[in-house]
Every structure is written in structure tokens, then in C-alpha cells.
Image (cartoon, rainbow, N blue to C red; front, side, top):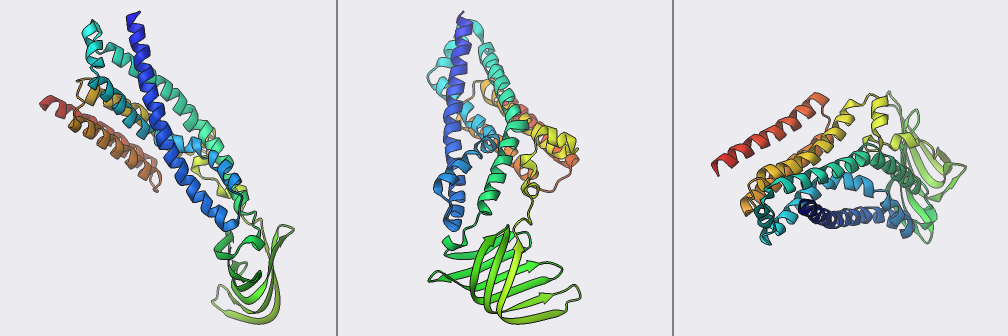
Length: 340
């Protein structure tokens, strides 16, 4: 009975610290993302409430990124406090040794493993896909009349627009677009509106320069010119990336590199907890050096993993580097423990 109560108490302490650090980290990450999205709101005059709702779809993806960091600081915070309050010594003195601590960490690791697996393999990619689609729709629902200026706005993959406004009139209109040629259009003034899924430009007093593959140049000066550009040049599928792919999508497309990314992410979750047990908890070492060593090595491995995931790397090299770093860190830790 005492053993069960000890484990329940330890699990509650670990969970409370985990949720506390999760709330702090997630709040910071979420606020940073809202700040980035608000720049879209100010520029395109999108309602703030729409931006706030849009940012909620980022939360699952943010959690998958920050959970390893949360585990580092949550476990440290929890067991440093238990150590300072002499609760760890009290548990050991009851004759149970490290068993309650190990069992509590194993149970906690199991729940984190299940939660993170569902989140990383399926839930986060699905919700992030919704976010990408909604962000795309917001970016492409442009009310030009509300915009005071355009800072080289990408209308689609091949079209860039820039203009100024004076007394609600479009002036200094600059457009680059590609069809069978590369085109540059400039007009002193004009009108811009969207109709029938097309960007319509009614331009006055300007010129158009076109370049073909043979580098021949055509120049047209005009008093009045009408230009229409399709608003559907970017397909929804084109805005999706590896973060929008579930494990089933990866398997179907044989994207084994992305599968490796997800598996290594889960492996690092378990590694952080095991590394903490080996470096700190097993020998009851919660001094500054041990704590800094644990957090520094763990953060280095996690950041290295993120850098490799965002680089153009082959699957063999990726797995080799991460696994080598993990085993090297464990080997160095064992040597350090022997000579301390």
C-alpha cells in the first residue's frame, strides 16, 4: 500500500512539473507564432479574431517540437525539489531503494510515449494540414481596397505585385509575371480587383517589357492596358510539406526519411528520460555540474536532430549521426560516472 502511494505521489509530482513547464513553453511559442501571424493581419487587414483561431491549429505541431525540451526541465525541476526537501532520501530510507523512482519514470515514460506517438504520427500532421490550408485561404483572400501599400506581394508562384496608394488611388504599380515569357509591367496608376478567380489590373500610362528564352526583348508603352492573371495558380497540395504527412501518408508514398524523423523524435523522448535516470537519479546527483551536463547534452542532441531534419540529408546519414551521438553521450556519461 505504501509502495503504491509513493508511486502515485511521484507520478503526480512529475506530471505537475511537466504540465507547468508545458504551459510556460507552449505559451511562449504560441505568442511568438501569433506575433508572426499578426503581421499578416496588419498587412492584409485580416480580422484579429481569425488570426487567433488560426493560431490554435499550430498548437499540436508546437507541442511535438517542444516536448523533448519540456521533459529536460520538468524532470530536473521535479527531482531537484524532491531532493532539496529530502523526500528522495525518505523514500530510499523506507527500504524500497530506487525501485519506486524507476517504476514511476517507466509509467510516466509509457504515457508520454503513447501520447507523443499519436500526436507525432497522426494528430499533429492532420491539424497542421488544416492550418496550412486555412492560412493559404487567408493569404489569398485579399481585399486590395483595404491595403495601403504592397511590399512585393506574391500573388501566386509566378506573379509579384507592388504598389502605393494615394487618396484611395493605386499608383506606381509594378508587376512581374511569367507565361511563355518573363514580363515586367509598370504603370503610373490604375485599378486592381479580383473577379471570377482572376486578378484584374486596369492600368494607365506605363510600359510592359517581355523577355523570351532567346533573350530577345519586347517593349510596349501604353496609355491604357488590361491584364488578367489567374488566381488559382497555386494548388492546395502545393502548400503542404513533410509536417502535414501522417505516418500512413509516409508509408503510402514510401517516404522512409520522414518516417525516420518521426521514429527518432520518439526515441529522443525516451532517451531524455533514460539519460536523466543514468546521469542524475541513479546516483542521486543533483549538483550544478550534473544538472548542467544533463541539460546541455540533451539540448545539443535535440537541436542537432532539428537541424538535420531541416537539411537535405540522406536517411542512412541521418540515422547514423543521431544514433552515434546518442551512444557517444551515454559512453561519455558512463566514463564520467566512474571517475566522479
